[in-house]
Image 1 (cartoon, rainbow, N blue to C red):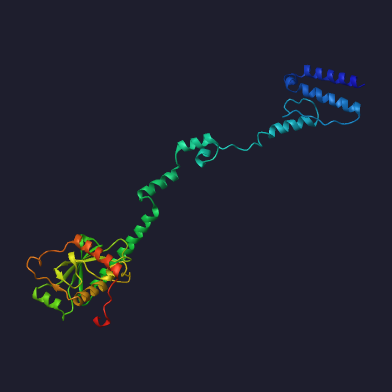
Image 2: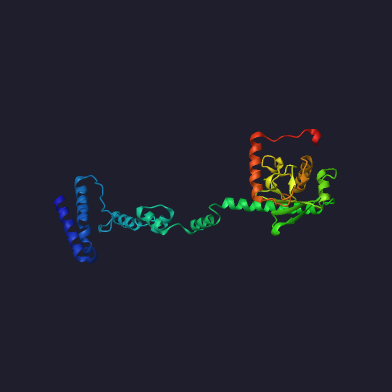
Length: 307
């Protein structure tokens, strides 16, 4: 009986293949599996137990009726949809991901526009954007402070000092000291030599008022009074150690006038030396030397009786 059923199944399969040209076209791909499926069904009827159905992978060549054909077609339709999308080689190279080829392509393409713009800005700003912004902030602080200082000096009622800008620079001042203690010998020297003022030069560093200005005497040529070679001035408050941002130019000049009198400063009247002008280079060298000396040995605090 089982042999008769197999023959009937083979005859039906042969007639169907010869009648349906589409099925005949796919006969090579799925005929073997279909015959095996029919033989399995026949064996199941004859043997009295069910065998698991075997579907060809993909289901494209299955021409046998039943649920196997529908499942095979749906699996074939859904297979390409379930594949994850593959990133483009250019995007993978730009992000530094992907295989060696993608990374090599990204390296040849060079940095992106944002990275290139940041590198150009850093190069233009001296290698970093933070120092440039900090320098701009310090310049604004220095300018505002010096403008206020000029306004305060212009309002002085006793005309103690006056200011002239050097080459219209806000950071380079020539300051005229018009008054000293009228009981001092220095005041007598100014009267006898018709000296109307003592001229000083102040230059303000980039981080002023947090660092002191450099101050030196220009004229007349003075002796003693804590005025050294080149017109350098020996005052602790003009050093980084003794300076405070609360000091104003007016306060510094008043302290200098007091130190001139205290140090017995005089106008030089020696022939050949009195007309010799002070040198900025010499003043800077002298000031650096005295700062090192006082940092090593300390500053002498005057007694209270000296004022």
